[in-house]
Length: 514
Ligand SMILES: Nc1nc2c(c(=O)[nH]1)N[C@H]1C(S)=C(S)[C@@H](COP(=O)(O)O)O[C@H]1N2
Ligand SMILES: [Mo]
Image 1: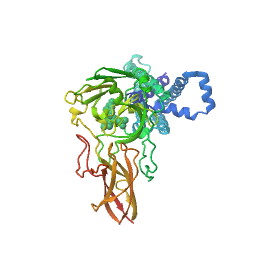
Image 2 (image 1 turned 30 degrees about the vertical axis):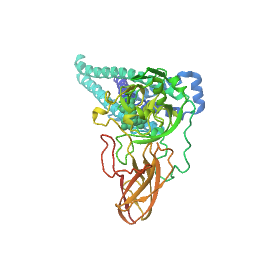
Image 3 (image 1 turned 45 degrees about the vertical axis):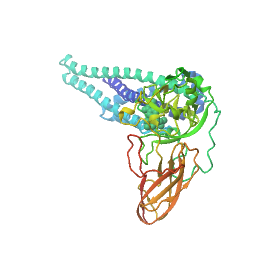
Image 4 (image 1 turned 30 degrees about the horizontal axis):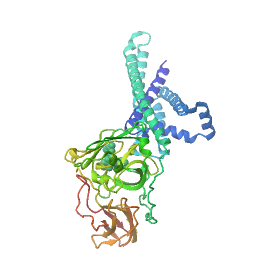
């Protein structure tokens, strides 16, 4: 009998770890799930023949069958772990540690590896080991009391016995409840992920201008000119990524308008779309920081939707709202001028990733994200700055947020050492909607030297630059400064990000030694 209960303890312990990590994944971001990573790794690993056989056997329930199979294997091994742990302390825990490593390996084989995704399998294994130790501890205590009491009394081991079963039952109930919640979450996210995966984006009526030759300066160690989606920075207040079924998505235009307008996803996709490279940035990006990315966005201009609604005189702001209630306040004139502020549905040739606002977000060239780039967009309220405040405005941030001209040194990295002689410097500079005119570098506060500036994709994107400088042995300070196409240069004055964006020159140290 004790072996049976030890096996049960093993299964419940493994379940606790798994359910806890799946709940965190469901809550924070469905893409973090270790179970999904493990399933994906299994799918990738099995030979095509087996895959075809599974699909023919289970049909569309093939994923479910895979999950059930994984559950069976994990349960069996967990049961063994429980039995082994009862016989020998930490022997079962060691098996759980191997579980954790297998989960970790699965996560590492996936395309989108993030720090949080790596933490989850380790956390799951850790929790499972703790629960296993406690359960087996109680079981051992009960056994010990039973043995001591031996023949004398049947009832003597009652309290120890109750202690074990209470803990086992309570934990099992928590696992079942949590498991149900995680499954429901998974189901919702999986459905929307599937809709996203099978969604065919319309071809743009107005395709993006071709990337000019030489826009990529071709220096090793630079960030890609167009940021791949998995590497694109993510900033939002959403603790859990909103999961929106595009079939239920609606965008309402309300407030100071001649007529309220409502748009669904199919109607939006039927509009003439345009594709534009736009570099968006976060106001929280410190000088030299990486909260900035450049993507190819597909969408329909906001101004055309606003024209359908007809803003009334006096309106000067559009308060855009996301499904989770977050809001941004954007000047009406920026949304209606020729700059192509977009209701974006596509990012680098695919539907928006869930984390980046699926199914629809705003992308406004020239403004920081906190006043313009609303993800999971559901409403545009035409209003006045005097009447409405956006989410960040009462929290110490400016109501208006044009992106400040800035530049960054990416090569070499700060603090690197280099051999004496010519050192190749490279980086990016941006002044959205004006464009960069020149980039200069100076060493140890000497005179400014002009860098080679690559052609920008457009004035709304960042520009790459490079410059080779001969450096003497010793420690050097290198600074960069950009000037826009109207002749306005970056200010040297160092200011931090609040309330409307950082200023100052990005400064790095290079150690030149023999
Ligand atoms: N719904 C919603 N949209 C949002 C935010 C948010 O918190 N919630 N943050 C904004 C901020 S501050 C920035 S910088 C950009 C970042 O967009 P990204 O995560 O796609 O890079 O999204 C904007 N859109
Ligand atoms: Mo931001």
